[in-house]
Length: 298
Image (cartoon, rainbow, N blue to C red):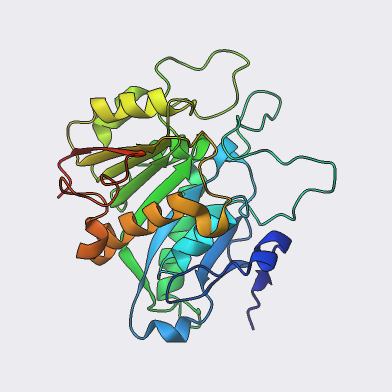
């Protein structure tokens, strides 16, 4: 018999965070993938034939904590997605101790390596595909293995770009991130050394969502967007939002809404969701705090 450890973090429980979608969601650690944290609809029987697209997520700072973006990822899962974050779920920090904020520089390990690796995004994808075909799995036949996205915040966004060549990946979401314009300097925050040339290897649509110019990744993200010519791309940012985004707000705040809209549009052909991003009167365009640039997404 296979057991799954379902985890209710204190902050999430206090807020009743199950997402706003039609499938109340949970966060759990599956023994088949103990290096990651899984976000899914609580009751898979209520999918009624719907299948779950796969979202592999890389954390800000490349931290090895799959609960770092729990409000945001729970919101995504509640709309009928399987989100898998790198790192096992970890408890909130003890009183008086500050956990690394998303995107506030990568955790150093001897100042030579990030805490996690981009290959762990591939591990998440491989596990989900295998579970979909494994008889006895709670996910048997319930995962849409042809619809796979890699997404991440800050250092996690770089991880997503590092694996973007995988032909199974159909969508890329880069959040508060962008490739640096120069090689990493000695002693710099640890992350994988991904170069601008990687943008030439993209084969799927890509979204960049950042904060305003106060976001340390704003210029890098905008530069990436300007360089992309071979695939549809979108860049959007909001005034008054910095590098930390809105991920820790209830249900992921506005970034949670944008993520759900993007995924519903791209993976579920939701025409209403598309209106958030496309057209002169797109939903985000009507908000003076949002700024949207689009290359070929229709």
